[in-house]
Length: 494
Image 1: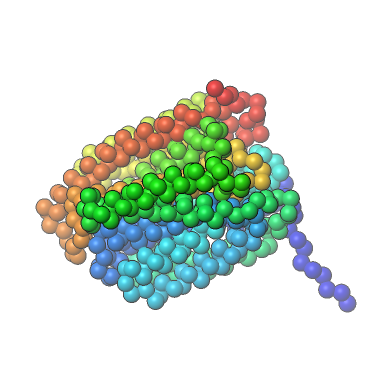
Image 2: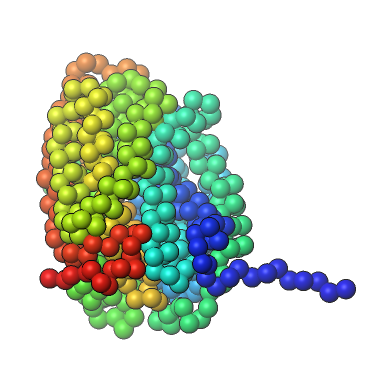
């Protein structure tokens, strides 16, 4: 009797339905790494009371994950393009699930921040690869774009669903379970990837050497830049440690640019940014993520502290964003087809800036006003993020898809780190560095509202300039996900 070996998954698939196992597994992996960005945000007040954390410490509970995640995405994409995308993804899933279980041993805020940073490292080995592998599942360009649309919707939905899922869970379990649940999800994703994603072939990989100095410099620059914001509040803006952090961030960024320009095998080929699509998409993604992360971090504190809402009710308050995220696809596609990428993204940038400006007024005018601003902002997020993600990855060479996806995700995570750091820093500077337990006094609530008004008004200008500036570098292509095979016929460059 002979034993039959398991049938290998096909090299490519002819439809989304035929690829449902690997597509579901990749979406699950992408969902868990994105939802982990915001899952704990709803629990920040609970964690603050449980572990005795202040505003800046809570900022780093979320910021540490975004920082290591964003700082190492390019490195992970580079490693995957060299040693195998499926292999690196499976390792990342295994480490991510295992680390999530370690939360049961956490007793201090410092330990939680360290764990979150480690989870960000593992997640960095997953995010760009899930997007890259989706491209590899299909030969047909239109199918690739449809699959990418699914991934984007899943990832963005995971980002905004985090507070709702976390708030619902907190009504029944301790906050630690919000991380423990990652383990079984990672196992399911591993099984699906093993069953449905084909093994890497040598011709799909690059032979360039790994750029370790570039990776170290990029992480150093991003880390010091974000830390300098926190240090300015804690130690003073003219203190030695703050000035040293700012100087270190600038020097590391300059060193990164010089090294990448001179390296024979750079982690990030800076010549790619001569392509307006790549440059503009990355810049615009930074702006959208600053908007999303800052609003979500600020409103979690707003709902639970200023309004005194329970975690469940605060999570449900994000429903306008979730519903808009899921149902904005037709509007996004119509804008892209009717006006082209550049104009559509400018419309999205205007929605972002307008929503943030409106939020500065709405924070002390009740939830209905806030909800309207959330809907407008989400339309902007959905439009800019979707068009820019597809345009950026599609503009990359075929053997650099992981780096393309990593660049897209890095831009988003840098924006998330900056947005969270800015809001946390401004609230700490304008309101209080130590969040009090229990019900806030009327004076503290009024001070908090003032801090939010200043913060959102400032962000409206910053985000509008960044997102619009990036949009202006895009082409007039009118391709959208479902019609990507027509792109060559309709794209115009100016």
